[in-house]
Image (cartoon, rainbow, N blue to C red; front, side, top):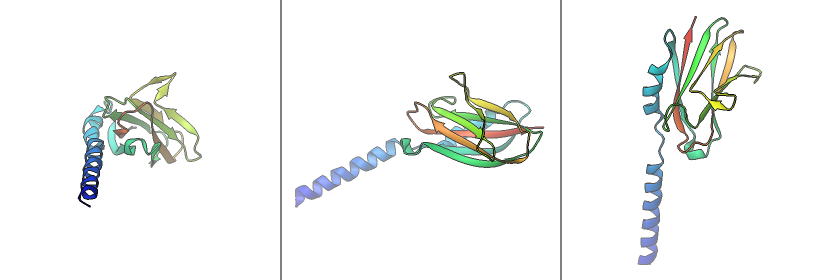
Length: 142
């Protein structure tokens, strides 16, 4: 009986220790990401990106965009810049409009000029990510 209690106790501590090591803190990434909006862009909203150690394939948000407004979405990951993260912008019909992968190269921000007012979807996915964690800032300029 004592051996069984000991095994259970060791297993419980091993699980807690493993969970603590892998925690994502997107709030820290947002502190870095928000000031990185390009000059002239006004901060609108921040997004926490937590892939739950790879258990989530994507993290998605929606936001209303206005016609004639230019938007910037930047990425910051715990791996540096936007490393391991991809942002893709879709219109209300789920048509892809922009992505942070251009000609096979990853960029840390996308710019988009809205042609039609409506709801747009901002999807974050992970590409060779070790941490599945980051932040993103949305800004606008008229």
